Amino acid sequence: MKNNIYNIEPNKCSKRLNEALIDTLQIARVQRYEFVTPEQLMYVIAAQKAFGSFCTDCGCNVDDLSRC
Image 1 (cartoon, rainbow, N blue to C red):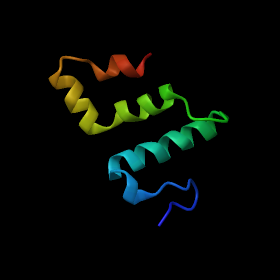
Image 2 (cartoon, rainbow, N blue to C red):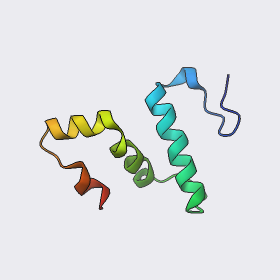
Image 3 (cartoon, rainbow, N blue to C red):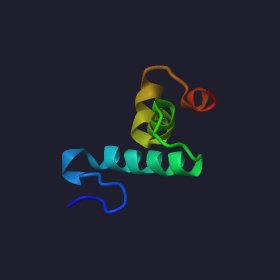
């Protein structure tokens, strides 16, 4: 079954990736972008708890990423 709004097939990707794609598409719409940009996707992924934990473990500050 596809997501009716965005035509994303949930069985083709993980739940976190599916959520990130939907959030990214919503950001692109709010910002009136015709397409999703890599920066928008990275912003959404950086906000995910799992990614934040990974970055912290590697010595990276996620807050610095969100300011870029």
